[in-house]
Image 1: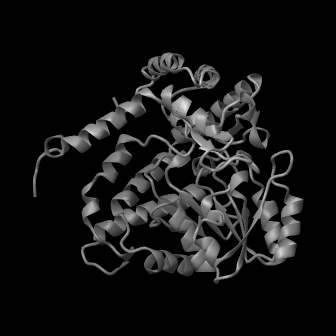
Image 2: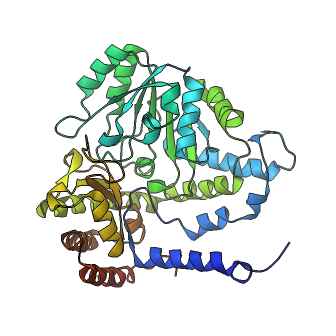
Image 3: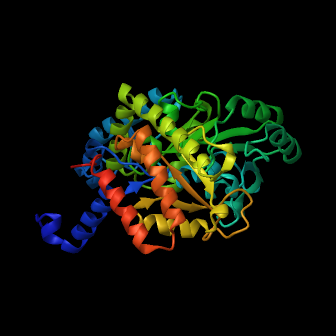
Length: 412
């Protein structure tokens, strides 16, 4: 085994990592599903735990030498239970998509019906989009938002009565409003459906008490551990005790092999951070910052989907600015501002060149930016979109972004 540093052994990879570090340091990261983890989370993620195989669960492993691994995984489980008031937690899913797929296989039979959100209205690919393999196995029926951009619970109830789904799924990747979980559970009870919530985007806001918590209400809740929860890239499933054995068997051995215990340790560290009072302040500021962006974009005649935001993100239709979402993303990239192109409800354009952009506040809030910076950032975004074809002006905006980010260093 070589004992050289990364820089010594593989200067090409090291150089690419350093360039990415510079990009993160000098840019405004506004993709709402991205965040910056703490040095403690990074330390756990890069630890010697990556060396250990540990198929199975705490106390029930297929390999020897797992006594300390069990301790770490149990800490992650216990902290997650405390954070979300969960009866049962599985911290082994490698990301959000496998977590969702494991739930489907645990609780559904092939051909059974799931009522989930349409992708263009804020849903996620794994919620039944036709391009996914899950859509070939289960029958997904997709509901949408109404003319006000809100989930129409009366329509959801009518669809549930009509289609008799085995599962009703809520939780979204681009929807910006609060969710009435009690009302959805009532509809599910009426038709005898299992309830599932995917809180991948808003888990940190829920853990901090800043948004409604579906975990004590719904049968099963999935999440990623990055995004607003500010942990490592990974997934997690929380459920009622009655579903625990089925969920655990679906994750392992049903879908995955050995868990990534270095990642689970990093999850445990992030959960401990989320239990600190400072995390509540952080989550509160995420929402404050998003509301400032909302107000400032409205002032500048931007069309906000779903009539605004209750969480960490905004979905903006840029059609009236005479460019596409893809063109806006490219221009903002050149200006040092990272967002993602995104479909808007019933978008007439393609997913690879849609009408909208999606942006959010978790990462810039982690850096310490507050209301004043939100106004400044809105101005920078607006200028970049107005001048999306002018490379000189975009370069000038990029310098302003660098000047701003220098005041809020990341890891230095």
